Length: 549
Ligand code: FAD
Ligand code: N01
Image (cartoon, rainbow, N blue to C red; front, side):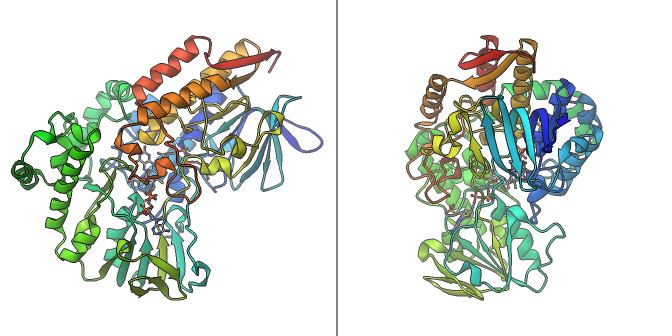
């Protein structure tokens, strides 16, 4: 690493973000012998798990699988305590990784990157931080996260609210004690669904403002036994291999607690009678709908499954008006990120919880003391936004990223994100995105997708070093073809149904182009494609320039 008189630091590579992606990328590049530094806005490692400290925050992928596989010592020595670990435990795990691989010495915390400018003459990226520093590097790797920019909706009067205000994605580190406090919460996505039951247990009164009810399934989380951990660890090589070949990077080894895995749906719901479906609900509750394969491709089949879902919901929630208010309608099951919960519907049977179904009259304004809706005014002491994120593109577009000829990323992506394999953007040489739009990313167990991207990028940069190549850049043609493919595989699935307003489509952010961003083709198939591209001398990418790094 060299610093010149203008205090510019020169590196082989700079990584933005110290979540699981940035941490592993750092470890990888350091081991390959590159000079590298990570710039991170937070005060410590962990990314998602550093910021999202709201009550109930936890992962919904079995932790034995939602963890790094790159170090066998790490996976053998770390002991997860529950099937799906809570946020504090995942953050401890991130800290353990940072300690074990001595990562912090190359991470600059409390540092937000504002500008990322490509200098064509010197073939360097120049990054500017909120500290006024300037860092130059041959390669720039964006590990900025897909869900790292909290979305606070613009609601009239929001600034007038006199009480405490929180966002689930920026939760105070010291925690919040809601004892004796009346609370209003906006949002019933995964974050709201996790937080609501726990806040209800503590708060004097909780008012839930729900614009769209979600389909949520019981999590059935439980402690892990020593026996199960031993069993899974002795099978780790096979579990990891199968994750990598799977559709979503998950083999659900944790759920059966004996190695039993989730069965693939095989039956057709269209061939069942209403009576048969109700018997299934009696026997299996919400789980009854998992056995049907046609609900993902046939809208009529899907609606039958939604009926079964609403039937079960109505059996849990005692007050008929509240049950009706919680029932999702008008959009298919499976179009949004799956949500799982612990006692979510049961929480609405508590006397201190009120549901405001905004479909019966929306929010008009936030007042000094609460929220005015078309249904009346609701007062509370504290307001929680569980309103999600500017997903997938938010963190990238908040930086001033300029590529070749000074082209600004926000212009290139005006009609939605355009990448080759979710790894690179044409016109932005030597800049990589980990789990970028156009890759399986948020449709998968992110740890599997992160490791795959980091390994691919590491191998690519090594290949360039060995062959004295100066730049790599995705061709416009490869981007075009890849995007066509990404759209083609998403079309006709529930994920792109016209009635679906998911953040996968950017539909949660007013004005954001409606484009399906992640790649539905599956982790296994995608991995093969990336391998094939690399084996074919990085087909679809162009290398240029010879010289030393
Ligand atoms: P992040 O963890 O988001 O890290 C990105 C980092 O980049 C952040 O620390 C941020 O501060 C930093 N950064 C961004 N912009 C800048 C900038 N301009 N300058 C400096 N630093 C910057 N995924 C799953 O697969 N399974 C789950 O069960 C699961 N549960 C989740 C639960 C919650 C509450 C949330 C919000 C997400 C969950 N996810 C889950 C997705 C999760 O984001 C990923 O699993 C994973 O943690 C992402 O890691 P990352 O390193 O890519 O990004
Ligand atoms: O955010 P969301 P999230 N007025 O966008 C509502 C991961 N995650 O933080 O649906 C009123 O899903 C909005 O309503 P609507 C996971 O990938 C995982 O909950 O737009 N309401 C919705 O109800 C997840 O998908 C876990 O009509 C407004 C809610 O706010 C992703 O993060 C846990 C509104 C936002 O839901 C995001 O989840 C947590 C407005 N103006 C997060 N604006 C796990 O369990 C928004 N809403 C693994």
